[in-house]
Amino acid sequence: MQQYWERIKTVYLRIIDPFAAWLVRHRVGPNTITTIGTLTYIVGGVIYASGHIRTAGWWVGLTAMFDVLDGKVARASGRTTVFGAFYDSTLDRVADGAVLGGLAVFFARNSTLHELPHWSGTPMVTVTLFGIIGTFLTSYTRARAESLGLDAKVGLMQRPERVVLLSAPQAFFGLALDGYVLMGIVALLSVTAWITAVQRVAYVHRVTRAIDRAADGVPPVALPPALAAAPRGPGPRP
Image (cartoon, rainbow, N blue to C red):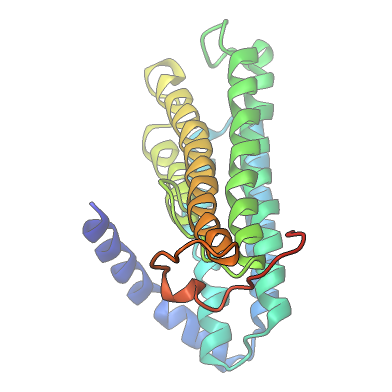
């Protein structure tokens, strides 16, 4: 499955290469691309909130290329910066919140729109909020691990997969089967986001325990090369 997904990403990157080259030629800054991309996600969230699920799915799916373009343009133009990485990561959280927030508003308006089974409004708002928290936790655990010198890019649901779940099924199926397809996708995203967060916590616990054992004089265990230079020694730990 992972190999299949990598092939899809390779094809996708080749498709957007001409767009990236055009942006580099016209000296469009990567931070500008990041900002525009975030605004498109906010628009997608508004479209979801209005109840146009299929339209929102296509919109989010097609404009998701900005997620990749900013990094490609930054590298191709030699304009990669520490702030740029921080800015991109921060606005990614805004984008995730906007799209999932739009879906939460859509579910909350079900008593007015009547597009889903009458019982589903409040439960699906709860599930969507659960997903928003899980999505933010997924990102936070990785960022916090990186501040400790660890690479916690592990887990079931990475951001590309999350974007696909937030766009492709809705674009093709909309509110098929009385909205059960949409509700199933949101529930799947919420559950997998929490699973990913737990996987990252477990990963950090495992590797930091090895570091702590070494610092306490316990016979060392084999550590990944990336952790060999991690801070060691007694004293309070962040």
